[in-house]
Image (cartoon, rainbow, N blue to C red; front, side, top):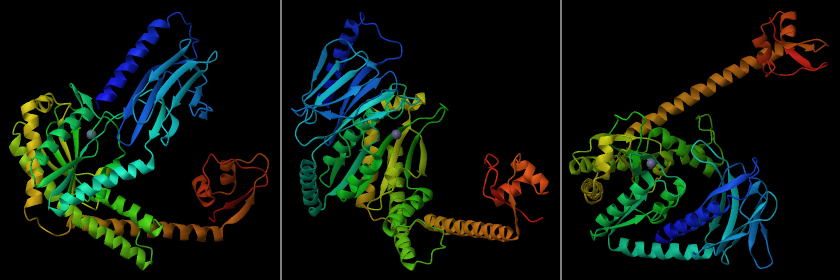
Length: 473
Ligand SMILES: [Zn+2]
């Protein structure tokens, strides 16, 4: 974390110097400029992000004899001469930027042996401009070694009956989450994650693991995979909320929704069975068995997640009375899809609400918030819970299947009707000067029916000699 910040500061200072010294350079209006260079690093990967003022035209990456990699930005201006950014980190040794032609900027970079490098362009959107990303990944062998060491330690603790809790500070790196009233979500939930980890780790019955411990992004699926690989007993994703209606306030505890779960079940069935038909139309018994098994496992985990959510909600409310509770809710968040352990997502409050923001920023309240979540998880993991299945999910599946079946039947009936109409239809050959509406009126049929029977829209272009089906009257 410290190194990351230092790298960023050095880069920013260098860039400021560059801009100050580049006033003499005349920029062509259509050429882009590099407006910022940022660096993100996680234990497994790193990213260099170059912000560009226009859509950059970037060449493929080439390699020099000494192993240095480079690419060109073919519509960009930089100051004369070469700018070297020395980097002291496991992913990147040096980054050099140089104007090599009238509008060509060359970016050189050198990576240690084994580090994989990939570059790509991210187009600008509402919140971010155009970016060139150099994506750097740890060698696979080192990664496997580090992961297996982590797993050995966790297994040793589990043998001593220590419960493993995976804490997931949301967002990170290029994705800041919500930013309002002086709170940047990615940083806020990082602070909360570390506070919470301290609560768990000083209790010998628990061991907490963070999905990220610095300012970098992790894909949503990867976050729960970390917990799955460690065989965690609980997964807690940490967030802060935002709403444009500033009166909305309070904490919310989420667990998996039926709609989210059914989507995940479909994906898993498709993955194992290589088929997506979930309408109940399929007579493949094996597929139905696979599906039933997945749904039951989901319903069992959801039943536990609900109880975890309820206990966290209760304890959080008791620990931080100044933060109102909006209750336990359900949503199909991707991080909650795991079937391996009970999973909840905590929204600590609305950064958009001034009262909530004041609570969130208060050091004392923050400590009590962490304590509340810790007590809720502790209650859940150390006390007996109700075994069983989430009945509302099972009901949802039943009605979802019925709806899909009805829809499939309706489609089948419509298709059968269309096929019958096709059989009764006569054929018409397109002549010069014909249009779709002329053909319809000439044959005394509504245009919509003509289009429907021929599976075309009004934008369809007809050519002389084409054959069209004319619906029977
Ligand atoms: Zn969030």
